[in-house]
Every structure is written in structure tokens, then in C-alpha cells.
Length: 151
Image (cartoon, rainbow, N blue to C red; front, side, top):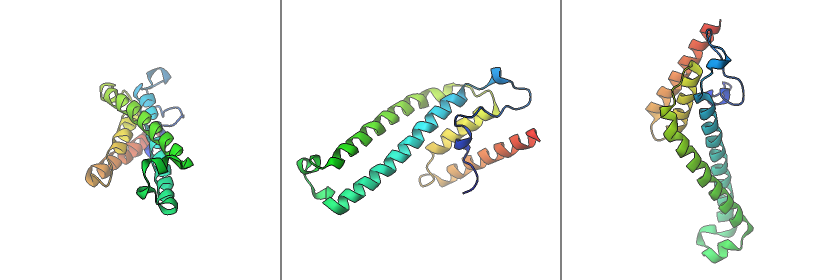
């Protein structure tokens, strides 16, 4: 995919300001969503790392047939524990922020797009393809609308 994900437009860059808005009006929700999405991305990377490591352990050491004691002596067990601890930490932080985000009012189109990016990350395409596709469509429409306003 050559098009940037809406998530990547949040990052550390200044938000796109629509005509009539100045930096003092920048939406507070943007930073909160950027924080949530950064942790979510870290969770995804750690989960993939966990899967690769666990697959290798299953293939090379019959991981699932090993006892707790046998697993504990393998150096990779410490890595899995560290990944698991970090995943738990990230999940707890994002859950806390997720309870706050609906109460924070988006005051710019960029802020609305950021909230939609979080919603998109929460709706897995395998679990609800229609909702995922609809949110993607809304983000695309909003991005196109913002583009036309800038031109």
C-alpha cells in the first residue's frame, strides 16, 4: 500500500490546521490519540515478535510439550516473559486512555480523524469487516475533504 495510513499522519508532526484555526486552537484529542496509537503499534510489533519466537521454540524445542520447569531453563522464556509483561502494561495504559477519549471533545477535523483512527484500530477487519471498511471510508472521505479545503 503506497497511501499513508491515517495513523501515520498523527505521529510527531504538527496537526494539519484548517483555515480559521491557529496553533492555540489545536485539538487536545490529537495528542491523546497519538499516544494511544503509538502504544497500539508497539503492541502489534510485540505480538508479532512473540509469535515468531514461540513458533521457533515450538519448532526447535517442542515448546508446547515442555513442562514449566523445562521451559524456564530456555533463555527465550525470559524474552517471552518480558514481552508478556510489556504487553500487559501497554494494554492497561491504553484501556485507561480509552475510557477518557470518548469524553474529550475533538475541536478540529484533524482531532475527529484521530479519534476515528483509534476506532479503526479497535475494529479488527476479521471481526467486523463492514464496520472496519466503513471507518476506513469515513477517514478517506475526511482526508479528501481536508485536501479540497486546502486547495
